[in-house]
Image 1 (cartoon, rainbow, N blue to C red):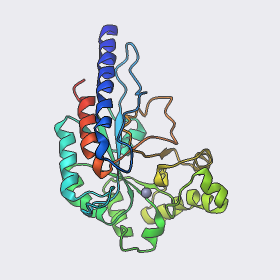
Image 2: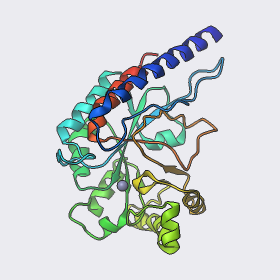
Image 3: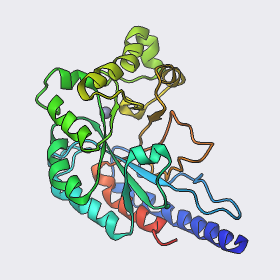
Image 4: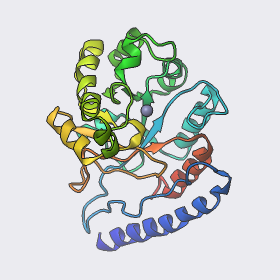
Length: 279
Ligand SMILES: [Zn+2]
């Protein structure tokens, strides 16, 4: 068992070395640095099985707007998801990941931020037929305000009733950074405190998970969310980080996710392939 575990670790190390290569190839990506894999992936103990791990993807909208870095067409979305399945990755829900009921080391969790109206059609036409239940992080101001670009309250309720998790993403989608606190402490706190009650009124369930607007967090924000009863909070950047929810070192209020920028789609697939669903 020791020998096997060491072999797995060595193989993982080799995989990580390979994973550095795509970053060098991402010269065409002009705005955000290319995806990288974190160097500290929790490894198995000497005689224990590998802990369950998930890669949490962070999508935004599905309008087919090729000029937007965070938008995909439904066809692009479907192709990406099917590529992941073909590589042997399994789709899990964020609820199961948070509850510690996910097994295996090659799971993908789909989260979608902002509550764009296109999420509903993507769910109906792409996610649901594949048995994928995305977790939505929404900011209530636009849903309650009836904005054209946002999901309606009825759509949100329908998705929640069908097993899609709903979490908070601020109230107005303002950042909760230290800089934002210095600028206006009251607005900063409102961003953290207001969404839970609003989402509970919309869906009937109080959210226990929060995704930081713009992926940016601060110690003050983490403290405020803990005081509000949130159990989990999620950051986001371009890095791919397999997360072991059972790892005691995991910061529950700063769990990493990978933003699916348009231009890093091939890099994500290459890195999932390099991480190998058969290791
Ligand atoms: Zn957002």
